[in-house]
Length: 250
Image 1 (spheres, rainbow, N blue to C red):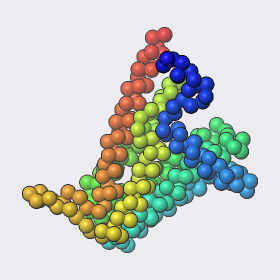
Image 2 (image 1 turned 90 degrees about the vertical axis):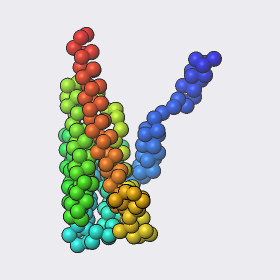
Image 3 (image 1 turned 30 degrees about the horizontal axis):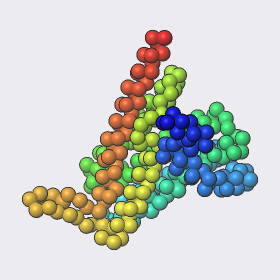
Image 4 (image 1 turned 120 degrees about the vertical axis):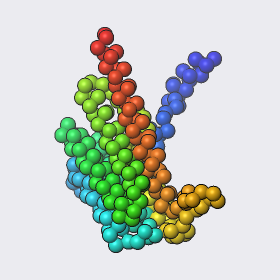
């Protein structure tokens, strides 16, 4: 009966898909009209990718201005930077769609996209680390830097494995998840600061330091990201090792 049910589901095209793929397809349906508009006005995939890089430079600028001109309790800069991170992240999806729908795919375009994505992420984390250090969140800045290392290694292990003929795409905290995590939590931090105040601190009797403060809404997810990205990179390396061993033993 189970076999019959499974065949029935496949025949009706209702087989389950990963949530990530379903969400991606829904997003494509929403952005495709805008993609077609970009193609119509002559935007190329490389131009879209470059626009994403410029927006991420803007993210870093907001964080740096927040560190230089804002005070420790003014987290509005974090919120605005988060909004721009999500907007810039949209262009990560747009460039691929512009290439596909506009029949403008190219090998160099794929390379250009990958290189500028790395620059974009490095520049974004530069701004984050600068902001956290500027307001003396030294431990959080350390975790942000570790998250940067993990993010780069997730991408590097995949690229290196694929260069050796091994597919290596699994794991948590791939680039879309990283962009959404940083962007959404930064916005949430800015909004919460406008309600509770940027200097809100929560203490528990018997513990000599605060267990939570407003910026924790932003820095705790960065800490989780620091752990998960590096776990993903290590797991990808292990998966690649197994695949290479199987390939060599054939």
